[in-house]
Length: 182
Image (cartoon, rainbow, N blue to C red; front, side, top):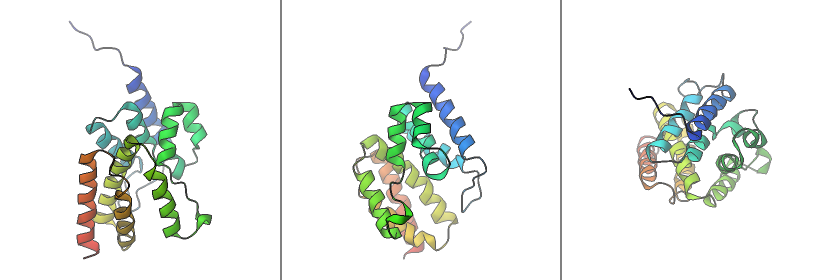
């Protein structure tokens, strides 16, 4: 009789990241679908895993919105998950603040920040773009017009991410442009 192998550290950190994201996003729902917000985080993590993402990349995918959209701080992420995952989440967190200027100025700052990110971070961001674009294009409203222009510009700085995810992101944006901007 054979027994399952003991769990390694990587799955443990992923289970913890999933639990943390679930707890932090509790009560939050996707704007256009009404689904629990954590499903977006799980979708992003699944895409990253499917292209061979490392445990750090998958954990960052699960946690990519906790600093931006919850009461969690980057210090909370660092204390719980370590420096490497905290740095990944920091790359994925918008650096702009409302007081920085209008939306165009803020999105340019966030885009410039991501332009400097390592390729693995750009891969996670591409998965996020795919998930968000699908939701906004399929279930959104007139905001899709603004969003699609911004994301088209963002894709230009994400070319070092996973090529397959970049192609999927581009296809989703193109589909959205055909629906909302044609």
